[in-house]
Image (tube, rainbow, N blue to C red; front, side):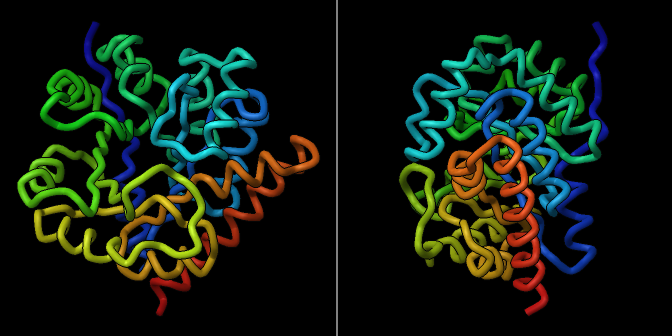
Amino acid sequence: MSATVNTLTSATVLEDARAEGRAALVAYLPIGFPDLPTSIAAARAAAEGGADILELGPPYSDPLMDGPVIQLAVDAALRAGTRVRDLFTVVEQVADAGACPMVMSYWNLVDRHGVERFALDLAAAGGAGIITPDLIPDEAAEWITASDAHGLDRVFLIAPSSTPQRLAATVAACRGWVYAASTMGVTGIRSQVASSAHLLVERAREAGAERVCVGLGVSSRQQAAEVAGYADGVIVGTAFVRALAEADSPRAGVAAVRALAADLAAGVREGRAG
């Protein structure tokens, strides 16, 4: 089977946002929560509200890097029967809506599906690429080959603890953008974004990164504006999941996601405008 080459890239989306004089808003949502149709509607609503890139997370039985809000959501999705095969349906639905879908996945799910097969299925569904929080470039040779063959973005994480050597190697291995984790620890809402985030973005740029997005802890319009002042993208996850989890109904949850995306998108624009 010949390789498929995906034409939709998150790099293009980030560059378009930069051309508009702003950072991009990246929204994470788990698939299958609170059910599969609602997760599709929520992802599309986030895009309608102003999210530029959608991170779609397949549920995983041992989400060690996620905080309690996301852990409860993915556990509910798993118990409801959501599986990796459903991911490509969601990606396709989001792409058909004109949004830019990426996958945020623990590597074991990709490996079990088959790296080449996963890349092929993701590209065919219209996905832009994968963010792999627990995969390091040293162990990613098969994925680097597959992502190149299918035109998929590959996003690795850097952290404040990254050594200069590790940071340089990670930046070089990324395709599309670099994920700067603003703090060590699990995902979740924080009262303020770690001050180390700005320095980490600067270090990544010095190492050659063209585009850097910041995640872990951003939940408010003010925080989005702050991060947008120095990053190419602002990543928000827990706040979106909480909006769905605390809603009185799936329909209300979708509306809450749309409203939150609009508020955060306004913050992103305020930050770069300032």
